[in-house]
Amino acid sequence: MAGYEIDPCEKCEEAMQPYLDRALSDDERLQAEQHLAGCSYCAKRYRFEESLRQFVRKCCAEQMPPELKLKLASLRTPL
Image 1 (spheres, rainbow, N blue to C red):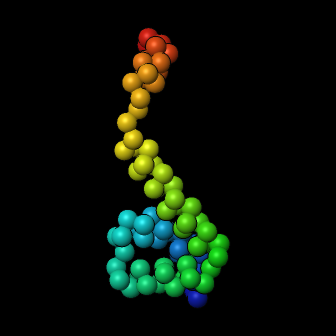
Image 2 (image 1 turned 180 degrees about the horizontal axis):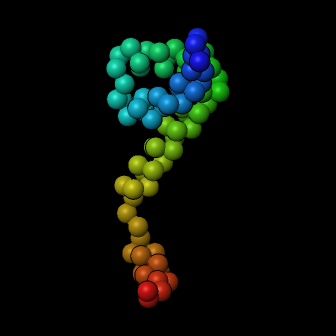
């Protein structure tokens, strides 16, 4: 369709993961930051995605208590 542009929120959504990964060019990063500064919906989604990544990193870094490992192992069923 001639003259059709991608909705700024759709464009931001497509760039969200690369933005969080710091994989955007300087120009793309600037565009994303400008959109996030002016769009409360996308800014809220960004904060959620960033919090989720921090939570996952924290969970992956914490050691599981030995008692929990034993309990989980006892719950396994043979294939």
